[in-house]
Structures are given as structure tokens and as C-alpha cells.
Length: 255
Image 1 (cartoon, rainbow, N blue to C red):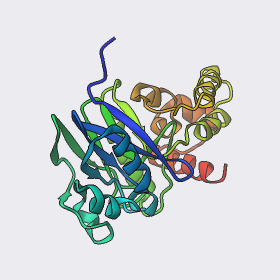
Image 2 (image 1 turned 180 degrees about the vertical axis):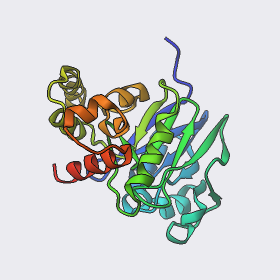
Image 3 (image 1 turned 135 degrees about the horizontal axis):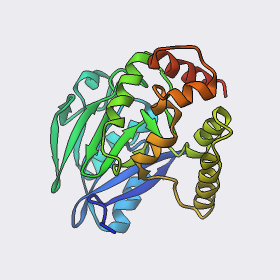
């Protein structure tokens, strides 16, 4: 089997935050959404590596809490949304939708994906998508600032990426999201089988992520808001996919 194009490792923070560490050289890494500094510093010490970049997807504290101390301890180019610069730690590079950033031997393609927050970014790098709190394993983020239409448009943008793109989300929410998907479509045995498999993975101390975007396209109800089968299965009368998405998000909020 072909090897993944991008080498990525994980650092856990808080209750369920995942800080993704992207190899940018033989002994350097970029950190995505470091909500805490100490776990990243420990990782870098163990790897005898330096911090080359810090990529920020959005302004919430559990994603930026470690940025300033990491910058002070290890340096690293801090990258975040130009539109959100007023509520992010000081940026070395302020970026916008469709910008392309050199990252070691790779290039990060910046995607504006508002919905969870209005200034949310995702980063598509080689065969990897760092989605922050926009797209989770079989779920999506709450709409704290954006509208359903905004989030649905953002999800369509991510859904258009290649099937073999690996999903790296900002939290380990996969099993909770699968429980919701199963409640929506209990007759889909593939969902129950998937939950059993992922539960076994997590019970061994591993993360459920990354997995290919093709799995999200098949099983994530939020990415299927324009799927007639899902519409029929959940018994909604809405015509617009945006309205179906809004209904799903409301149901998930109260699940």
C-alpha cells in the first residue's frame, strides 16, 4: 500500500482535544491548534525536534491556549486567519481563503470554513485535512457564530476534497457522533459495525482518527444533508439541504 504523503503524530490535551504534529523536516514539526503548551514541549523534547510552525484554525481557548508560551519557548511561525487576527494570539502570518503556505517540503492550502466560528480555517496539506472544529469524525461543530447555510457551504467545500484525504479533526468525538448517526438510521448495519470496530480501536488506547474522507462521505449525516435516502430515513419534509442540515444540527444539539 502507498505510504501517506504527510507524516503526522498526535498529542493529547485537555479532555478530548487533539493537537496534531506535522513533520516539516527531519527534526522539526508544526503544531495544529495547541490548546496547551506543556504536552507539545514534552513531545518536542522526546523527539529532539524543533517547532517550525503553529497553525491555528479558530480562536477558541482550547485551540490557542498554548500558542503564546510555545512561541516564547520554541519559536515557530504562528499562522492564523487575517479576519480573526483581532482575537487570536499575535500572528507572524495572517492568511485568507485559498492562500498557500510553504510548510517544509509541502504546501498548506488554506480554506475558509465559517460556521462553528465566522473566522474558522481548515488546512489541506498533501493527503491530510486539518479541520479543527468544522468537521469531526461522523459529526460537525456546533454553530456558535455562523448560520446553517454558512456551515453547510463549508462542509460542501470539504466534501469536495479527494476520497483518500485523511481527516484530522480537533477533538475525539467519533463514538458520540456515531451514536447519533445510528439513532438517525438504526437500520444501517454498517454504522453499528463501524462503531464496534472503532470502539475496539479506542479501547487499545489509540485514536479513532485519522480515517479517509470517503468514510465521512458515506456515514456522516451532516455531509449527507442533500442525500434523498437520509431525508427519507429521518422523516423530514424540508426540501432544502440547508434546512435538513439545520434540522440535523438541532437534533444533535439535543441528543
